[in-house]
Length: 74
Image (cartoon, rainbow, N blue to C red):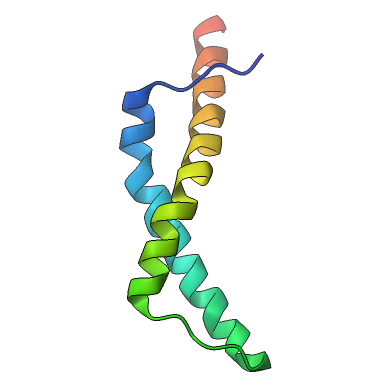
């Protein structure tokens, strides 16, 4: 069973998850412009990054918590 991450771990990782999501969304919109889609502004990318950074951070924090649990056993 995968352990639930602590709120401290989630809070520590969220800025990195949201920032990575924002950068990836912005670059994806640049690639999308090759097929005629519009390019997102940096502000729109940050807003989407803040939103999509939540599930990405939670998934990564669960992974880190599992690794921490394995290290404690070992």
